Length: 397
Image (cartoon, rainbow, N blue to C red; front, side, top):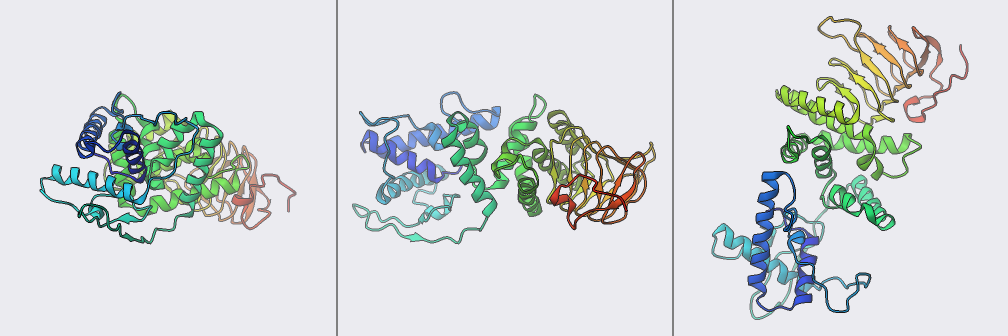
């Protein structure tokens, strides 16, 4: 079954408090069996069980409240002793299922370590002490901020609670959240959510750069898009960000020799997001694609770090020749809406391509080009045009 997280243990202890402790061990075993069966059902069908939930312990628990305990009444957090009892019951179930015949250390049973783990329980007629060992958590300010914003969003708009919990708060890391989003958006009758999620999980586990790039892209969108007010927005709502993360998984498949699966990802990204990026294209991090409608990036295109582009941009070829035939975009370039950059040409670092331009020749660094065909009309106007997003031509040299 799925890992037992802190939220599952809280739900379990509250359920015990509401129903009493009679036959506690037997009832926990039945609940764990139900959660395990629901997880098997989810893996086979790609959807949650209609009665038992999605395979988590919290979803399998009966919805029981104390008599007179209103839905809006605050409930105190479970005590440490109650939490230790819950952990002991879950560990005992897992030990029995593994056939060990004895107890299994809690440190070997629980993947979630956001809270201090209860690692030793003494069965001598009561709980003498629950020892805690501090864990040095990985510092992840982007994911921490996303989760904080997600909680605030649930408070502000409860109707989105299911979406936000399943898409963000249910996951222990940004990588896992992106895997879930990837599978939900690209699944179809031809490819299940479960298969796609396993592919994404494998990609993120194999290549840590994917998670690093995803965080840089979140910050880039927040910094450069005036319509983005929270880190949470790109994860849930911005198809440009989601399309780039899906492309990265397709590129990972391509570089591992799984080209047909990479083509499938490219096809689904194009169908769902209206963004067509060949999985062999190479794209850096800190990418912001605003609106992201009708983006086309060809097979041998290269896009550097900290590049910004708007909708309807094409990085294409000039004919049906084979080989290296697509543009090479250096770091810090800003590409305006509707710009077409064609052929194996170089666009220099921190340059600007004006909206609607057709670029057919190399662009020097730190310059602005505009027109059909595009010509140099001045300097870039600043050191980092992709970050300032200034698209006005203030004058020609």
